[in-house]
Image (tube, each protein chain N blue to C red):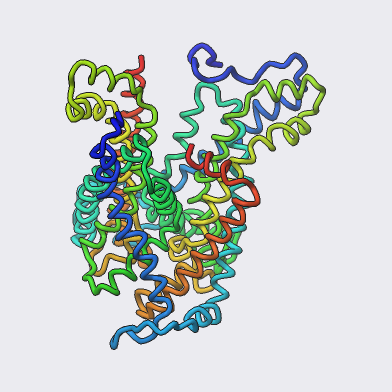
Length: 289
Length: 282
């Protein structure tokens, strides 16, 4: 196919160019613009000027470190919950799903056929103070009238866990499914107990899936603001909500850019440190599978 | 149970000679029960959405079951702003899907087929755009539009949707390109087809499943997007934007109905796709 002529060598550039340009202009350039904006000063009426305004970053941290830290803490809790909830399910489907494996996976992916916002709104409906769960319980006198779940961190963490659980199940499943069952049998033949076979054979072999699952759950959860926007209250505001408000309501673009950049940098550094510590190839391999 | 039907799947629980009873209990009872419980949990909000689309509720506040009705299916488009938002979403999704599929397919072919200088950069940009938090995509695009003083609305939403779905299409098509059997194209050329005819008659049809999958993915991503859109929409409302706003005051049952119809449409397409693929293989 690649008939080494001069014209042939240009083909990949020409074919890839339009898409490449689109990503360069609307993905790469905006991030650089955001970096520049985060170092500007001024206001929405008179415009902004580039002044190496590092204080935007200091302000961002000073005003909103609570929400930064809360986002990271929520993301850690949600990732851990997802891992614990997803592993047994992925394990069983991978090893004992038999011919119905793809049916189970399809059922797990069903939520993706409903809009993310509607799914979350549906939880708000289910958990409503007077709704289908709490309403009858309150009428029966089993719960005090002022009991509520919405606007608490429980609701936000619950919503996040629900929405991101499939992202954890899939990479775990992919990694577990690849394990040759005869390795487990061999462990049993060598008189390994059930738990020893799991600890020494299955779990270590599934680690690439764990790494990938943690990564693709943690990053979007830390920057999510739909769940805390719909299910949360003033005490559960995450950094994403702050960024959205500062951009769209306060129009303080430099401050908002600085926050987005801090979030992105924190996540990137986290990803690289994590990938370095645990082996990039494995993470990339499973996340692309 | 179904070892005969499953040709690709490995056999069920490998019957080791001396399986302790507790092991059986785990794999036959506890884990399957847990899995089904989790599947029920996955489906709960969907079931609630569907059921409460039939709720005979008074006004907007759709909270408790009041009796069965089909009113909301009849009055599906009785909230003008919601109908407009849905129409906007569909329009944007169609345009974004077409553009992203064309551009993404070309990138996928370039990356899957050729080795060239700067390929690593392409891979890096595509990987980053898929893994970057949506929040960052939206915030940075907004920064660009603010700096250029570009009016936000339909155009900016569509640009954004093309941007974030392009990489997904590219990755899907690239996987298909890498799986192509080069001998088919060589055969066509041996039979005297010029490169363009070979591409049109051989390569493109072979890539079609990947391109269709990429397009479906792009459509699904576009129609569902709230996060990126919320940064670049200006005054234009899409379906997710409208619903998000409505959650503050109460989501009207029409949203449940629309959600149900979109859900059923999506499931039908997915199941149809699987059945079609299965029949082609058989």
